[in-house]
Image 1 (tube, rainbow, N blue to C red):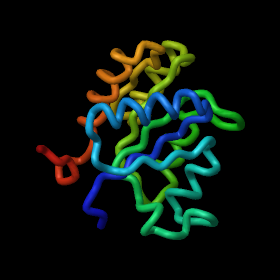
Image 2: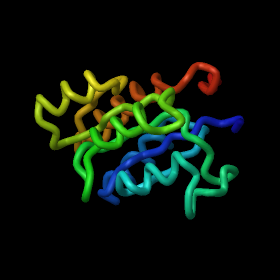
Image 3: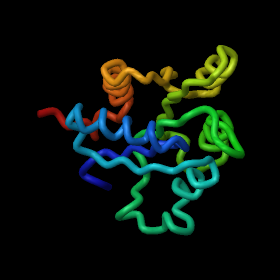
Image 4: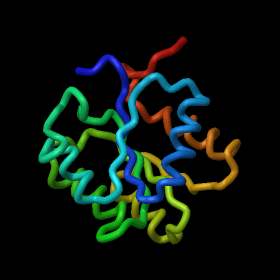
Length: 145
């Protein structure tokens, strides 16, 4: 098991990935962030397939943060797969989306997402939302200064 927390981010907008990383850095997150841009890659990551075979570099995540709308499949598709068909349904999933409808928001929570946050272009607000997202990391991985 890794000494540091690992977050898997499902996000296909490279600008939002940049801001997410920047917010983590400003919060002094001392874990690692791994990014995939679609549901197929996320499934392969969780299963340790293909380029994600190296569990030293691609450890199982302690938390998944997923966008809702991606090419091919949605964050709901991934959430359903993780909870029902993967070997790791215990991994907490938090949704972070700017385009989800209220019904998609409710569906994500009903399906088992731990929380749902709206994306924002305001860095201060984003930082605060990511700070709240980090609270969903399992306790044994949270490092307090």
